[in-house]
Length: 100
Image (cartoon, rainbow, N blue to C red; front, top):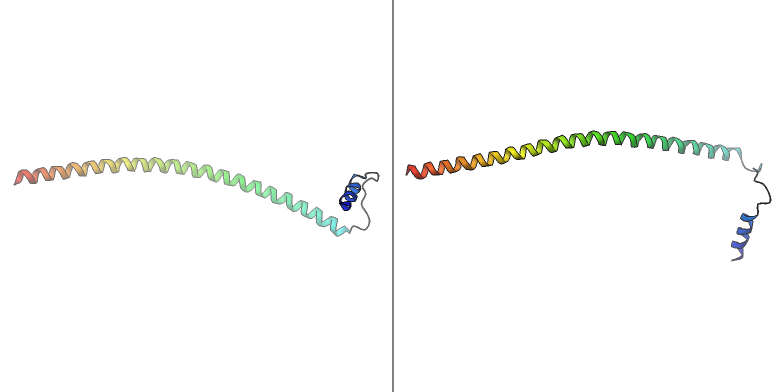
């Protein structure tokens, strides 16, 4: 429990202003800056890809709508063809029955 109290005291002790020690290597600072730049670049490219995906989704939605209309029209046509085939079959059966 005491180490936690010491840590809290160290965190709360703000009598000294923050400063950068000379013991921190320049390469570490450079690495942190480069990682920050890379993160910003990654987020920007990710945002661009999201926008491209939105546009592609809009195009696909339009295609899906047109395909749904086509499929619906084909279903209606298939229903008509089924009814026509039934009518032809009934006509043929009636002709066969009358022909006997």
